[in-house]
Amino acid sequence: MSQNLYIVPYDFTPVGDAAIRYALHLAKNVKAEILVLHLASSKPEGQKAIDRLDAVIDRFEKPYGVELTKLVRVGSIFEDLGKIAKSEGAQLVIMGTHGSSGMQRLLGSNAMKVITGADTPFLVVQKDTPLNEIKNIVVPIDLTKESLQVTNIAGDIASMFKAKIHVIGEKHNDELLSQQMKNRVLIVKNQYDDRNIDCHVELIKSGGSYQKKILSYTKEKSIDFIAIAYHSESLLPQFDTFAQTLITNDQKLPCMVLNSKLASALYF
Image 1 (cartoon, rainbow, N blue to C red):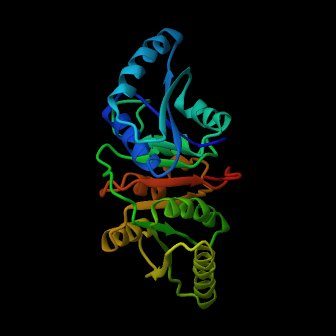
Image 2: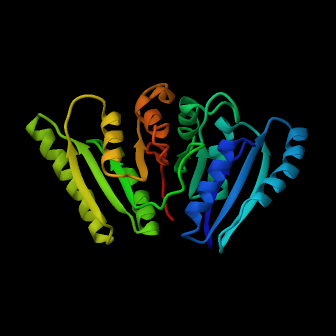
Image 3: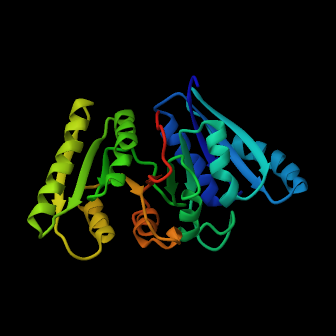
């Protein structure tokens, strides 16, 4: 492909508008096409959506080099979004999450259900997610190899925005586990150093909720962007509170989620 492709699932709600705005904000740093995708419940509904999408696209100012296009398909966001993203060769799905209305009720748990059905990275935003320049990115990791799979794509975002990456992990009381975690964050830091990406590593105190400590860190360090790998072994992964808490964070920060179990070759 000659340019990046971002897909925005759109449901004619303010949250869908927020996702388009953030896609345009992200794409202004690269040559990109943003595909606004509406999944209709029937062919007649799909026909109605085509004209409505034209009006929606006309409302947005496009940065130079950014193309805004549309696609309407009959289908389910839970079953078909991941397939479409893969077939279209998308590098990223930028999706809004909200409460009781809109595209098949994309609450935090339902958003995770969509994400776990795809191997394309997701960037989840909320209605009031600020369009800040990305200066500081937090990448929380743990002792699983899956948690490291998000580091490459987080590095791509950092390179695009010339941002600093904060690699954090939890301290461990066990000496062996503690050393393993220290080694892990240093390996990631060395990889970022090789790419000339500004990187800070820090181990935070063990005990309590890891996601709450991550969110405390985001406030303390003025983080603009969260990047995580999702690798729950739960039979019902949509109930994983770790990822849900981060994508619906009170600061409204954008949260990139990579489904590490399905992830294949990722590139920007």
